[in-house]
Image (cartoon, rainbow, N blue to C red):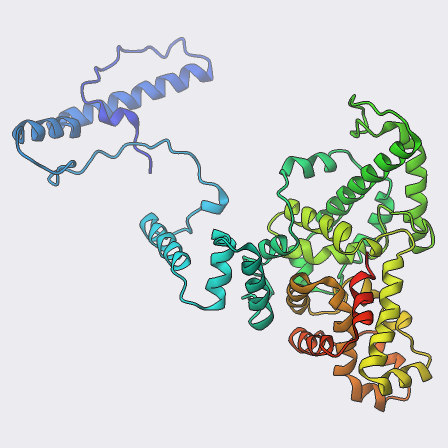
Length: 457
């Protein structure tokens, strides 16, 4: 409990008597109570005839003049004064009941563990993330990929890992972003795709309790709306430059100062693209397509802030798989066709059986291609699969879908109607799917693998 400042003033003289006859305001009453409390504390302290702590310290210093002594005398504890340190942030807050010294010791132990790793994959990955590569950047990245493939990232039962989002940002080569950049996009209000976003967000991983517990629909709406504004700006700049219009830098009520000349035309085009989903836009880049809500969900789940999820998701859909978010979603359709081709190469019997039943990948694999298997629970397995895909390329998701088909091969071949089985894939087994996908790579011809690499561009 904080000590009253007046307790350390033993020489405080008693105040003059105050008459309460004319006191009528609450402020006057509080002043009287304060002065009375100060008088009581001062009189009690003086009546004890005990020198103050400051006086005791001075006396001790006089006795020990010229003698080497400790900075703080052992005979008399230092006075307890009210401190005015800054309030701790949430990330630095000490757990209730734990001493500050224990917290410092724990931090020191962690720092020592990072500096001198014991050789395990966890310590190697943590050291690389916290300290960066030591000279050989490409070699360090190759080593990081190898560790992810062989051992994976340490995570709890919910799939949460303290390092995962940072490793994703490293593997995606994501540049740093100021949080204000993300906030400025949010403050611009609803984007032209806002109504389409609202129609999709409530369905995002609706049956996954882990996702619903950690990520709110409001976060999904904010992130997707910010992405829509970002893509809208890029599209407007391109249209403006192609039409030869000169833009200005004056701020407007819409919050996009340099983009107003093309705003009216672009808003109509963007709304048509997002309303019709994959049917509108052709090869033109859209600002939102159905399925982006599921594709961004793991980013929000793994990230420690919306700004982190925003920059990672934006770079992913614009650099790694822009064909998935174009108006006609041509990258997704190419990926679905590659599922059929790769399955025929890996297991011709299974491929022929599915085709004989009218089951082409367009029917059962479209969502898995578009969302990188994020539509297949459980979510911790999806995160583990994404670690591998970000390390070696999102194009390998096609082979991971083929691997899932091979995992349930016997069930499919024994079923007279495989449609019921493939209507929803069984729970994802990330390690088994990754192992099979890696085994396919060495057997594939170069031209087919090249199609895999380029299909989402």
